[in-house]
Image (cartoon, rainbow over all chains, first blue to last red):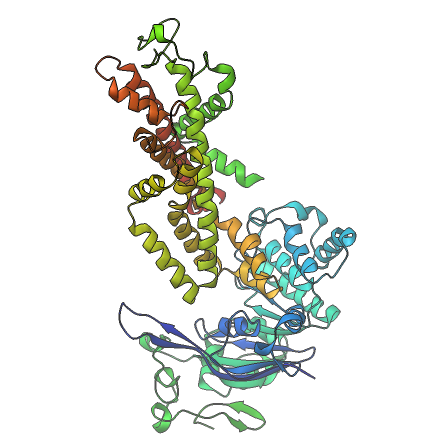
Length: 325
Length: 283
């Protein structure tokens, strides 16, 4: 069943360059569509600045879109208010990238985790403490951490607290906005395993936002590759890693540090592109190139690429926006 | 809480601020204990000892009505303290209210409120207060209120600036995503993190309010005699400056020391509460 459906979602920001000049438009998200099914993990990958985090904030209804809609169980979340909004807030939660910034420095851990329980009246006052202890143990933390403040904890501990806080409302969907990238590699693995256990236990769906293909390969069911506010390729995770279609996906795979996974079929032997330094530069989302937005960096560009914007096309049951197909 | 210990440690590192804090605490104690430590009734007239110089019975001398200067200065410190704290309290409440709303909601609300702040700032405060006091009855209550409602603009600006950055922080986003109401976001999540510059501004504000009160009382528009205030003691000092230097020197010193101490404390707090410096402390 489709839990979350995103339809031609756009978010433009206007950027004032100077006094008395016309504001420029920054197209952070420029018409994307995807859907997230029950009990599935959809990964959104792309370089920094491609609009991934803006998508996360839109889905959480922290910001409003320029146009388009996000349907949660068939209802546009931007039409919700009052009780229906509260119910939505209870169903969709977020884990942010920076565990240092996502906890209120002036509130202790007990206050932080009990807050959602109080807002949604999930549990009576006398059982609050037990529930907090239970949530902490779910994320592998002891009860003694309750009276501490965020600045006394390590990055991994803080990210666990953030996960516990999100779990407090028993959500259906968790948007994980680069939940690992601020952590040490050893901690990354622990948190990833924790997320996977919790997914099974709570039957969660994830929108997993990342730039780390290793992690995505291990974790997700489907992938959308995002470039300058648009999704350029959709695929099942295994298909994408075996044969990336869009040249940008190929570039991403080849620029990832070499990885070899146990299964020989899915291991990566992507050839390295030799890109000159100026080609490596990501164009500004304020000034998106005409035609295919990727063409200035594309090693396979040909005649129509710098003039015609490619449409989303289906080839062999996969979706890609590229003139090659 | 460990945070306070860190702040305390940073504060005590500045010697001058510690001296300032000590003086401020002493002044507060003196004014609270005024009825017990003042050697004489500050309004008791003694016509046989008019303008007597500092000596055994009157350590700081007497004024033109023979009233004991030391007692008057001690009682006068109550006025300064009251005006300082109440006026700044009023200013902070208004400033936090306006600043929070402007910073949190942004857009048109922000633009309107901040233009209002600009208008308020365009008035020369002291003359505005003079005009208001001239219309209203000059007493300590009106002074406190008027200084308060003409002094909130800086606080509003500081709070607004803090809100603008804090509301974009992830912990506020997380709280919003959890369904926290605007009131909760403002008062539980953003405001507690926005208060450090307000404390600093408040400390400087107390010094400013004490100066304004002294000025008003000096001009006869503040605390009315016979009730003593440092400002109105100075007025009689001015009238008798050729024969009684002590009537100008001692209340002047009292004002100087008080204002200086509050400013020193403010400076120490500003450094101790600077979050950029704290981060360095922790790692």
